[in-house]
Length: 535
Image 1: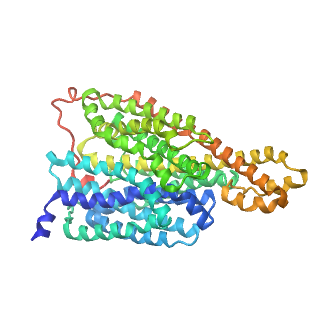
Image 2 (image 1 turned 90 degrees about the vertical axis):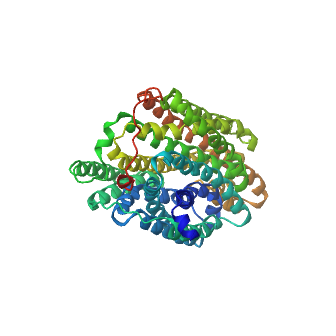
Image 3 (image 1 turned 60 degrees about the vertical axis):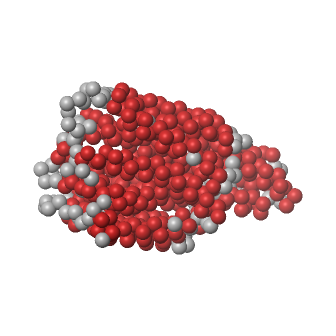
């Protein structure tokens, strides 16, 4: 009887969906804190460590729309349950990985599970909540992102410091089991009763294009931007063009990418801004995490706590930003958020130094938190405000996919820039400091630095590369080389997210402003359950 009452309670259903959603978002942030430990324990290069992030985000981005269509065919509950099972089992295998290749492969399987879950949550929320309560439900669902952002670095730091990096994956096991049980007991099996076509060719073309582009960006530095890499990027661009042509021919047959949604100027601009924001967020977190732990020597937990002020402020500001969007227009709140976030990143870069401490970055991170708190609510509202109800579900899927693509491209682009800067700065720094050693010891000193700029790889060889009486001097010089290299890497790579936010600000200037007064008399569009499953 109690289970039957729970099944009819939409808030219990929302709790179940939010737990699954939390797992997928947690694994986008928690791995960043563990990256130095993963590199050390598995002997991974910086390139391989970055792929543990990119593999997950890439598969998630590629399969979001596809998973939405599968939800149309087999029901969102079935796909959500399958996604939870795949994600949970992949998490266990990630924790058991014995090599970088194993970890990267299982992270990709995690991304598959997350992609199967993601589109179904919105379809189920829209189906179980009446329109007058749907806004509150969406607010709770959206706030889970803030909780995951906070708990990712902090929980990850705690687990890495106390139990080891493998437990950032094992922690998903009890959560996954709880979500599976709750899904079977309380989530209704809702079917739209509408037949849908499945565009296999479109899926293959989109997947191949994204894989080629992201592989080229991620591996370009490793292969010296040779002909293979350039060819890979070119092939990705060609496949993307073919995909768009294919979608053009299917606009009357349920395409993966409905062009009609782009007729609304605000939707197009807000989707672009969403991708740029996702890119800029990785542009701050990836290099800053590596700098805090590898250069300043912070533990994973301390690095996570150092970053905590930003998401805490963001969670506090977000509800007020939503209300202000109705009063003064989401466009202006969004512009303020973009400016504040860009200024915060620039301030982080400015404050980063060889002797910085956790409190050094608190003012800058408070500013970034103020900025991000003013981004998410107005961004979603302005994107969907003018979309036709029959396209609302597909539009949500397209917007979410573009945001994930921003994460993938940002991870690949930032990763390539980080590798290039770190490698070049370490090599030039080593050459400059080698002059402080006798000529007979210089070649050994220079040869001790790994080609990928890895601090651990260089440190293992410095002592053995010079005569014993020069080991202490060589060690000090090596530490200076790496400290300067990581610092220069942070200063350079953070220019990229600031530029991305500047482009987003220009795009926002072209958007149409909407206020509560301007919208008076207009009925807000609510996505139909059948369309929402396409997300």
